[in-house]
Structures are given as structure tokens and as C-alpha cells.
Length: 224
Image (tube, rainbow, N blue to C red):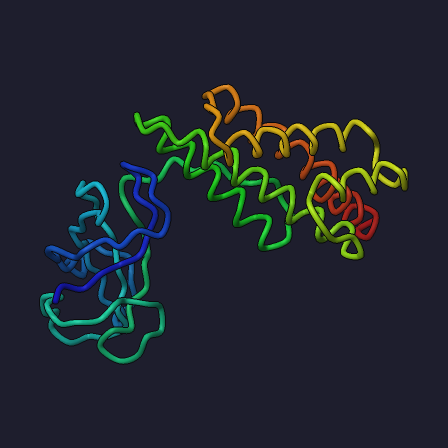
């Protein structure tokens, strides 16, 4: 059973897809940037979704003669002994956007999934519905952090936040737009490319104002 490496595909945009290792080429010592107890390998890998090829650069802290990756097992960092491999680089680079900074982990994950779907859309795969759904999920998770005392459907929580007046109405308008676009994507209604673009854009603006800017200001004041 060939070895596998999980990674986002730079060709089809699938996130955390399994790449199968097809061949390896150890780097010659004089051509690599590693200490004597680190072996680097250029490995030819293929995507489990689209089948396209890529190159993964792996590091193994072992001075033994390299052997082909033809034994079972999935490579993970610090997996132990022979399988103790670390992904150093990957080519071509996935064209991923970075979410707004300082997001809670679950919100960050949802935005990264929305971005990955956008990449697949750009490569000819119409991923409009799942893109708006993931943008909506990012906002919904964000509301869970902003107002953990509120429960129920996202629409009801947004209405409660409007009544409280703690959040500027313009920001809640953005959140409402993402909710509405996400609802379209979740039901039997056609979602357009513009819907997907707007959902991601509105989600980014909402998250930036609610998480990124306050944290940047807090850090700035702390450093003064």
C-alpha cells in the first residue's frame, strides 16, 4: 500500500485531500539546506481527487540510506522512527487566501474552507452553493463567540443582537446578508457566482470588524 500525504490540492482545490507518493528523489548533501542528521526528499505525489501531480518536499531526521516509500502508513509529523517525516514544502503552491487575523479556530477553519471552494470555482468547478454555506457557517460560529448566551437559529440571534444595540447596525446588516445568501445555497434555489463572491466578502468584513480590528487595537495599546 503506497504512502499518503494529506494536503490541499493546488489543481482542484480539494482541502486536506490524500496525495499518494509515487516516487522519491533524495537531495544530494551539497545541494540541500539541512543538517547532517536530516535527509530531505523530493517526492512525486498525485491527488486522490483529480489525479494531477505535485512535488512534496519531506524531511526525515535519519542519516540512513533512503529507501522507497513502499510500506503502509500515513505520514504525520512526529509519527515515530521510520515514519517521522515533516512536510517542508509543496509545489505548486495552493492559491489560498488568508482569513482575517485573530479569528477563533472554528471560524478560521470555516473561512479557509470557503476560500478553498473559491479556488475550485476558479478552476472551472461551480462551487457556488457550498461556498456561501461555508461563509454563513463562519458568521454563525462567530456569533456563537460574540454572544455565547444566545441560542437558536442564526436569524433569531441576529435579531436579539439588534435589540441589544451592542453591535453597529451596519455590521449586523452584513451578517444578515451572509445568512440570506447561505439560506439560498442550502435550498433548492440557484446560487450564482456573484452570490458566492458577496457572501465571502460580507463575511470577511464582518469578521474583520468584530475580531481583527479590536485585537489589533488591543495589542497596539498594550505595546505603548
